[in-house]
Length: 98
Image (cartoon, rainbow, N blue to C red; front, top):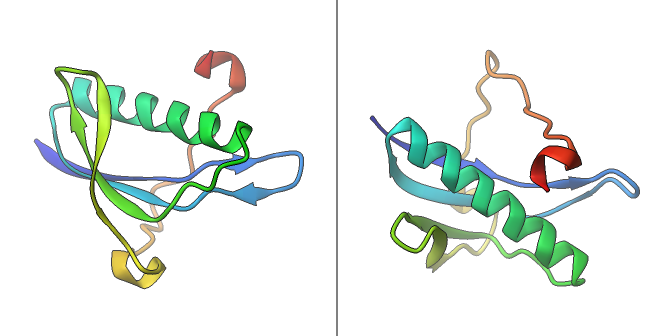
């Protein structure tokens, strides 16, 4: 299995959305799980620091258990993202992130 992952985070207190980040060519269900976990934590950390999460494409580095920037995106349109009507949003509780 190989897939792409799109992630953004919504801060509940002010409904602020981080920019969507795409992670390309993740292989295997365990790597998908790890890539999502690492990228969600990165978004939360950047938002807590007051930093902007920029639109970009990244890859999952399973050796170092991190995501690495591949290229930037100028706008949301660069993603050619299409919502899948049959897949609901996934909300992760803060306790699970910690």
